[in-house]
Image 1 (tube, rainbow, N blue to C red):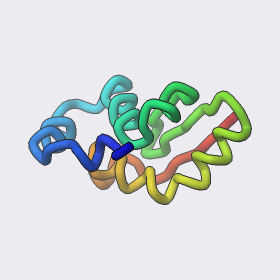
Image 2: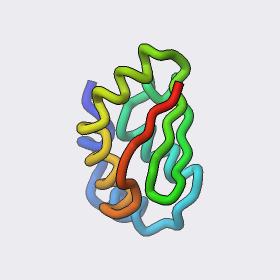
Image 3: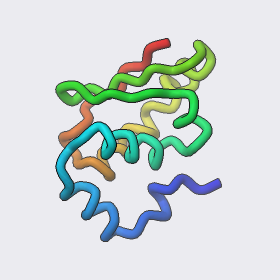
Image 4: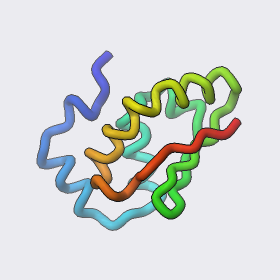
Length: 91
């Protein structure tokens, strides 16, 4: 399966970046960056540039931590380079 971030047209990325930052926008970007399987087992909240990810299990938390170097650039592409500086995973 190809992540949606690779399939999104540039115009949609620009539209998303141009809309006001909201919990819904952050949730949509998270879902687009990680895909439906990870999205279903996580909840996210952006606070002062840190994306806090609450994972349902320790195994998912470990997987998200391991994948963070791949996920963070996807989020920056969707939300803007300075919107998310790091990902903090909790279980």
